[in-house]
Image (tube, rainbow, N blue to C red):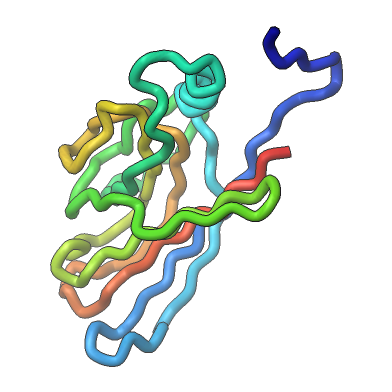
Amino acid sequence: MGMKLQTGDGLLFKGRVILEVSDPLTGEITKRIEVDNVVCTVGKALVAAFLGEESGYDTGITYCAIGTNNAAVAVGDTTLGTEAGTRQAITTESRASNVLTLRTFFTAAQSTINMKEAGLFGHSTAGAGANSGVLFSHALVAYDNSGAGSDITITWVITVG
């Protein structure tokens, strides 16, 4: 017996992306940027497949990637525009009721780019390689770290409701 949604019971995902820039030596946060994100159609399918216990979809959202493309994000996106830097595994994950918080830390050396975008990836095929896995969420978030002067923490706050 499966879960049945009634008309008007829409399952919605709303997210915020918080980028924190910090000094690598002191850890002091020197800049904070907050933006909305887009939950992609393939990301919604990822959740549906997870609920249906399909093979390969039981790993959750596991990686965060950054990129250099500043084209508008869209629900039809399946990859970042231009993935760059080092893709990192989610560092910490917590949930309070229907709010999921995923945090990823990038050292200055791992994020030496003029960052314009970020994305969350899941599925058993998601890994450290560029464009691997299924894109759950995509956001435009800009910070120029091409001089490798700062560590970066990206936090995704996803509300399901």
